[in-house]
Length: 180
Image 1 (cartoon, rainbow, N blue to C red):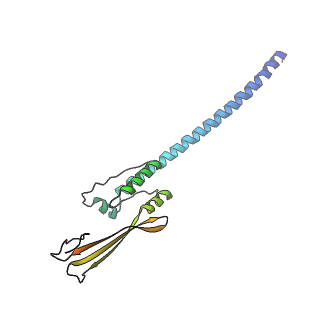
Image 2: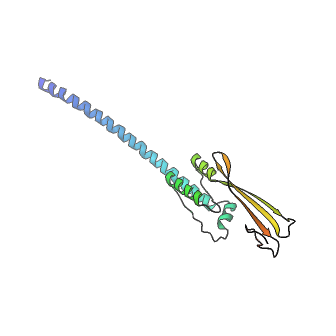
Image 3: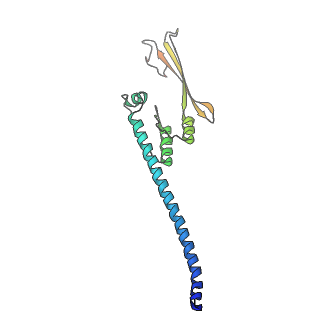
């Protein structure tokens, strides 16, 4: 080999080393992309399976839920299908703040955060009804106490009393007004 060829080969070595290093880096990036693609495909399949499960659950919901949702009412009910965590938290918080009668929550993947929020917003109601009072104007009294769980302690949110009047002595339904 001539000196000139040796010099050229010596000059080419650093270039070849850099090219080989760059090829290895590109191969690693390609491998990562392939892994990411496979992971995305798996995640997509899991989401599709969850959607199928949810659709099946909604189609085959238990009779108790069906009877509550399908009972005649002048109230408007809203169904929402939610896909991501941020959107589901927003919808759950909004529903818990605005629920007036009942909230039917169908979520097989409820997180500990959502469970804590639901429990925090739950209200317990105690109703004591006494009828057949020996009173000439009042036939019955009903006391109602609403409690809400806050920081693992029940606190009283509201206390109220209603009465039912004797015939011809005032209101015949449970109401807060006095009997005559």
